[in-house]
Image (cartoon, rainbow, N blue to C red; front, top):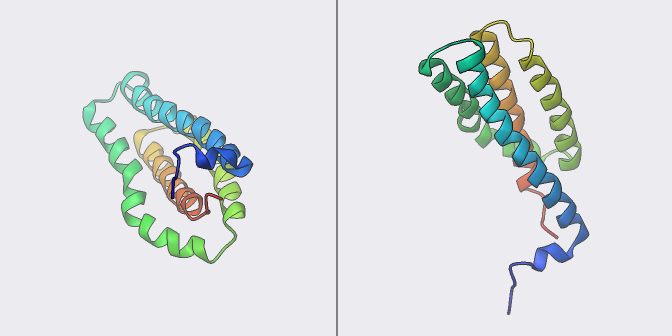
Length: 128
């Protein structure tokens, strides 16, 4: 059985999800860089604060990630993904108004939590 690397691209739903995910990943990367630049240059904090942001961003994947997949399997995945995207928009908007590092860390943790739930739903969708 010959399975080509481009076989999933033949399916319109996969192409749509792949294209959307490509732009989403670019936005995630720019968001990750912007958080670090904001902490370092706008607030003038040191590398410890930057490390705290990175650690807090990864904590939900370790703490909530394993349980998110169980939660996601019981609910409609598309609806969860849409809700998570809207929550992420609200949380990222809140990042602009964070008055200090501790408030920023709360928003970053919430953003990581929503991302962990979103990715659990995204990964459980069949490719075709």
